[in-house]
Length: 184
Image 1 (cartoon, one colour):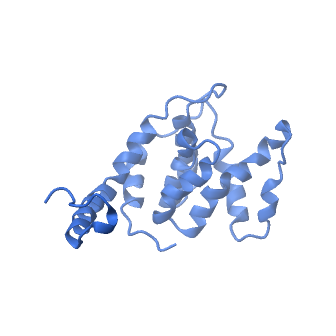
Image 2 (image 1 turned 120 degrees about the vertical axis):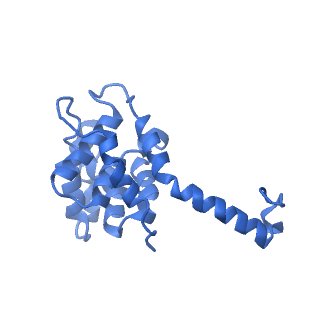
Image 3 (image 1 turned 45 degrees about the vertical axis):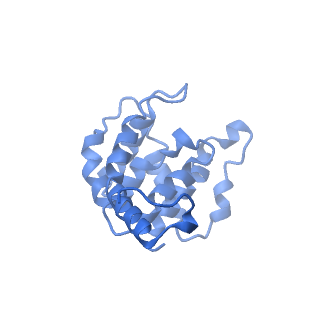
């Protein structure tokens, strides 16, 4: 059997679901390849930026690596804006959802909230609240998210910065996405 027998899930058999599970396990194992391929397509950007989204991601991850961040934080820095392509109005939550099974609660929270924290640098110029992040003051990961934005994200739009190449981060992506998923 190479295809399921059902047309409605409720009519599936154990054999059907075992077949699907075996295909899913293989699909999950190939997640790093799909992520790397997706990142490689991020060479265009919204008008106005001096660098591409890929360059921004590479700069952010390079800064994290240079600062001695953990492997999962380096990967999170690399992927933090992948949601910009498909979910521009909630990009941080999108990226955090991709990472969630493979990273700690702390790393997930930082990526999930970085969009709000990043507003500190520009929201006031657009009539918004630059201090929207303050609603999280006192949270155990507040300062870590401030640091992520300050040290790595907000300064990674520099066309003269020499970042590593995507291929340099492939081992990190493969390592993090080959982990046994966290039970967050």
